[in-house]
Amino acid sequence: MSAFENITSKIAEKNAELESLKKKYMKELQGEFNEIIKLFFEECPKVQAVVWTQYTPYFNDGDECIFSVNEPHFVVEGFDPENLEDPYAYNDDDSYSTLNVPNRSNWDEDIENDRNHLKNRPDDKWVQGYYPKCIAALEEAKNNFPGYDVKIKAFADLLSENEDMLREVYGDHSAVYLTPAQVIVEEYEHE
Image 1 (cartoon, rainbow, N blue to C red):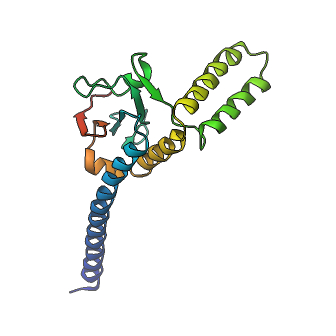
Image 2 (image 1 turned 135 degrees about the vertical axis):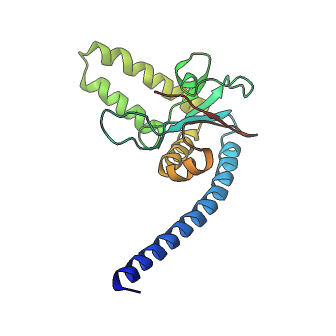
């Protein structure tokens, strides 16, 4: 075997080892993720479903099209597993009630940030109309769902940090609906 063939053979072996480790890691992570789902619903029993889309865009204004998991919606009212909606409808339609994932580490920090916007821009009518509604919604969520903010933030972070595993488990171009009783995955049409 020539020196070149020896080097390419070693590279092929290392790539095979890497692929084997990746498959092992994915299998372990999938098992742990199922336990995490179960624990999340046990600790947040008012959440009826966690819904999101995941896909590789077909076009990205000339940039590389990269698979991603989109922001999840934590549905607390109106979810019916027999009548699934487009995942974005759960956040945009008044028929459903969802909890917002904190932009910071919890809802208190989001409320404080929104109050700062109000204080810093007292003459901006849009700010003065928008942020009081946001603050009221966050305070209502904080009162009705105590402690959920930290858990949904952690769950949303877990999803965004494990996109390879989620692609392996649920596929590309998918709408995912997690409930305490089942996982529903449907093909997702997107532009």
